[in-house]
Length: 203
Image (tube, rainbow, N blue to C red):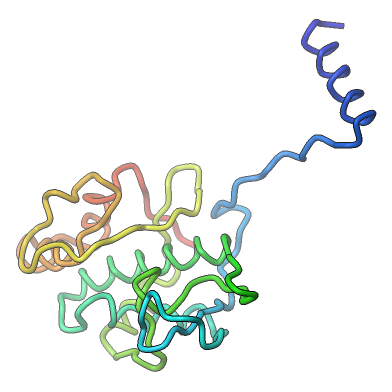
């Protein structure tokens, strides 16, 4: 028996004697072992105020949530490729948090309705943004190992390309419109500018 194996048996024995056990291995939540959520629990805070107390928790369909969020985070009149980039970001951000729920003052939830997460206003979906969600619904943007990560984004500067955000894993919302409208880039290339190393996968 090798020295490493002897140490391993000794540690296991010590664990049993002392009354604690070794934690089982934690398996990463990836595209390959984690299905799309069907629902999401949204904490509703008064007036969409990030510091307001919780009023209640609303549970709704995951796709419906994404359709309601996109027009609150991206300007609905923007280029369709910018909206598609936003649709992917909104979805991946929400998916991540359904896998990392939290509890506050006895309320269990995944996200809230404010900029603490993503701005949600029930029934705020619009045709153009709903279409962007639907057209990209079978697509995800992940690292090669399939890990489900929250695609972070910030407003950026109006009518600017968001150079300061390129390669930082934070997408400029205004930058998506610039690269779609001015540079004529498809949404997949826009995503790659801000999230290098990520790739589109079909689900």
